[in-house]
Amino acid sequence: MALRFEVLGRFNRARAAQLTLPHFVSQTPLFMPVGTQGTIKGLTTNQLEEIGCQIILGNTYHLELRPTSELIDELGGLHKFMNWPRALLTDSGGFQMVSLLHLADITEKGVTFQSPVDGKPMLLTPEESIQIQNRIGADIIMALDDVVRTTITGPRIEEAMYRTLRWIDRCIAAHKRPNEQNLFGIVQGGLDPVLRDICARGLVDRNLPGYAIGGLAGGEDKDSFWRVVAQCTAALPEDKPRYVMGVGYPLDIVVCSALGADMYDCVYPTRTARFGTALVPEGVLKLKHKAMADDARPIDPACTCMVCKNYSRAYIHCLVTKDAMGSQLLSYHNLFYMMKFPKGDVPEWVCNAMEVAGIDISSCCAPFSSTQD
Image (cartoon, rainbow, N blue to C red; front, side, top):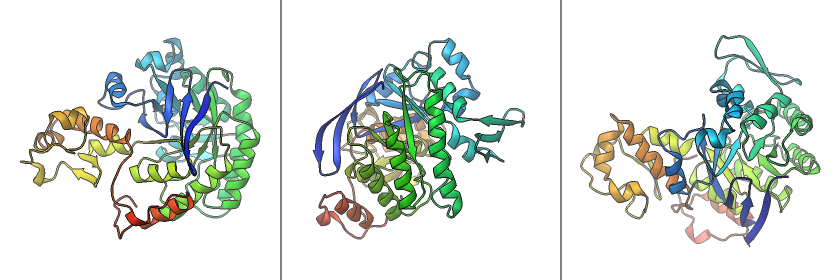
């Protein structure tokens, strides 16, 4: 095990902790921006440090396609390759196989998919996923799991959960760098509390360095979402980090943290920036809108980021449709925003989740129409 996790403070189920990894000592709860091919589009690693990013997520599938894990390994690992001194996490590659490519087929052996290069069938096994991630060299690596969205029902959910448990043993056996890289298992089971419990208990029995909650943020309703998070965090060890995968809406992060989760990742803050949208305490601000054309105010007058200190809404409006600098400035602001705990209106589902977390925010709850549902 190559991490240390120390809870520094607690309020009911919520906790603040120090996560010590080979390359960085992180403070949780934390949000991890997604650097698909070793880069957050439009931002330098110096800017990411300036913003306060602690861990960057790299996509194993994309890195293996280009520049290849062999080349990354030959050049000293992903940290050196991308000049990032802090921590890295790589996913298993399985989600991209299923979500991005046609004709993906999951069997007991692994995930068979069409090569995007020449269309030939290719196979990603648990062993190969771990071997690729061992070469890339991230501080945290993820087990290959059988990914099923929560909107799917029926026997496929149960099949995927049990296969995920079988595959974790193959991942553990294939992992050759346990003293340098931390292998996290992923709790699956859809919206079925019985299946989630079986999977969580099975992974805890393997005594892994950390655990992720997978299969969420895929279209399920918010009440189902927070109930799965509440169940899984309660079932996972107190002394290990808990990572809710694919979660990036600020309000979701606040709720999951109140329920005892520690880590999150999502493309949302940077992807929405490329569409000309800024994150603000009230929700979102669309800089492409005509009303922004002569607005001399910063994106958020209360924000202390470099963008809000130096540029007006009007200037960014002028850039967002014509110049890459627009999306770069918005990406900087949005990630800066994500490094802080957001404030804003509170919908009813949040009040329900907070009640389970032992936090009374009833005075804040009011009728609310969320654009994030």
